[in-house]
Image (cartoon, rainbow, N blue to C red; front, side, top):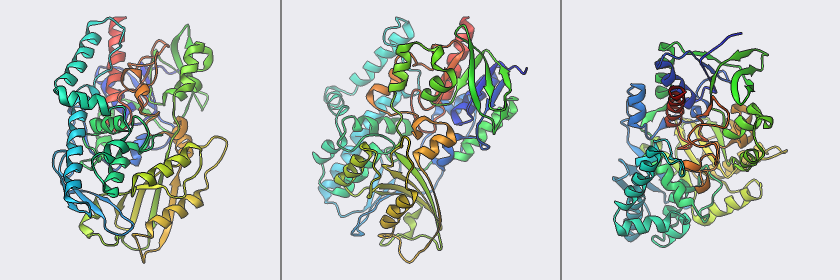
Length: 492
């Protein structure tokens, strides 16, 4: 029987980052990936808006920045589109819009306010979250530091942060601006990938959290995802990490609450004393560990962890290069958003609440010559049912035909949350491995008894997007999980 010091389940970016960190310390590491291609959900992302300096320093890699201009275009049914030029969060220029001058000024003020609050969150976003009642000096100091960062905002800004953090994005927008397109654009950033509507409490917190993680409210293109992944793969190769693809872990074998091996779908059993799971928490506990190894209360918390995916991916090939009506071609390299107003978003969200397919979904898409790649929401994860992909395509076509004319669709592929669940073994097909809401964030992510990357099973750790700081291609989850494992091994 083969034996490794550490086995990583899942070759997504966090799993590869964890393998890189652990192998540098001389550990014999095996990465097992279900699919042929490594990278997991990061393969859906062509570019990143931010890579933490801590990650780059830890991995000792350099990733070239994209020097192209970043544009965000909010499409309007009357073809009076709004276009933003993004040069960092503090330099957002409105290039064209029908919004009034006062709306434009207030829009920029709102963005600056959110940026201030997001920078406060970012100061502890990439660290291991503290345990509230641990009594340890490091946790106490981190909690004090978090409070101090908020206090340093000043009385006025601190009160404003505490006021808006539980609010819905719609109320804050409607209090400050009247232009529907601008309101729809910011609402899109607050709700995409969530089970929240623009009027759902906590949607501002989700916006701030994403902004803190991505260092950009609009998730612009700065780094090439594939260059990041290739750099991590090279580190793994250099450090003799063994990577096996097209193999699935069926079970984590446990003896006396300690991991001792994994069982593959090939029937092979591989010994180890330490495992890091890059699979989502729900799948890890309920399918790989099994209920027999967990207490009743922990099983209840696991089942109550919310993982309903709401975003589908669609790739469309057109006959000719794509042009958007009434939009300069120089903006085609940017991001496009179709969420024309708050009411439109809420109607799509209401269908999602009742597991219905919205006839009028929201779109966020990118164009590359004759190819279009889009996130469609809200497309709910369905239990014991299948999506009508022809209907989804028809709904998307009806939207695109408003802006892309005289161009025929040659082919298309759609991946729903159910497809994502099957392909990547992610419960609910949720791209963040679980809702990013106040009771599933920071020291409560994924839930009580399973935070700080450790688990009730000795030798088992989590590093997926279901851990702090959540989704996005950051690598922080993998680094923190690896460091926690190394710390625990030193203390044994």
